[in-house]
Image: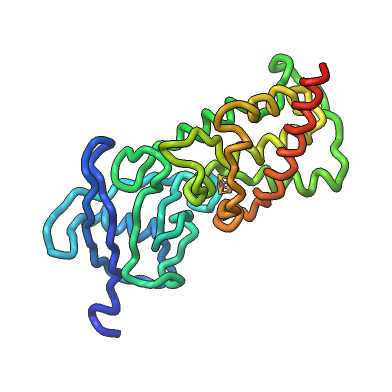
Amino acid sequence: MSETAQKIHLIIKRQKDANSDPYTEEFLIPYRPNMNIISALIEIQRNPVNAKGETTTPVVWESVCLEEVCGACSMVINGKPRQACSTLIDKISQPIHLAPLTTFPVIRDLRVDRQRMFDALKRVKAWVPIDGTYDLGAGPRMPEKTRQWAYELSKCMTCGCCLEACPNVNAKSKFIGPAAISQVRLFNAHPTGAMHKEERLEALMGEGGITSCGNSQNCVQVCPKGIPLTTSIAQVNRQVTLQSFRNFFG
Ligand code: SF4
């Protein structure tokens, strides 16, 4: 292997803070087998020297679990939104282009603020209410068939890849996005969570609710957890329609 072949070539879109203009900086870092994007970024952090040999600031990114569960390390890798922890250098083409998700405000470099996703979960009450903090005993059992698909929906890690891929989530739209809609389906199916079913559905009737979905179906293609988002959207759309009839006829 030549000297160049033993290097990993990264082209990173950087930004000093939320109000600065973005710029690109290139890095050539030593290759090791089985590296992921996070280990390449750690290498830059350890030795922040760019491809021109200039000392620079370490690239900032966010990560927590390193096993595709927390959703924090989402970024655009070679044009596709995905997780930096589960993207292996050996499996993607070089040069590797890294950029922050465009749907969320940039905090610095590859780190973004996903607050709008957590606000969306609050809007639809994506939780099972409890009456106090004392032991309530075992809850009602779910039918096994329901539990199986509900478990798949519960794998959502609010990573934001589905919002990034959706053409209807942008600065001009208040669309809540596929992830929160899928969580409405999950919590409405729960025997105790169903107590807030009407409130969740009504939250999706307003501006930026389910009618803002343009059915592009991009979300389901990028979800790293394989969540059937378009099925969830169709199911919740039906629930919202039935709820609006119920509201109309009192
Ligand atoms: Fe990420 Fe999938 Fe959840 Fe969207 S639905 S936030 S892509 S895990």
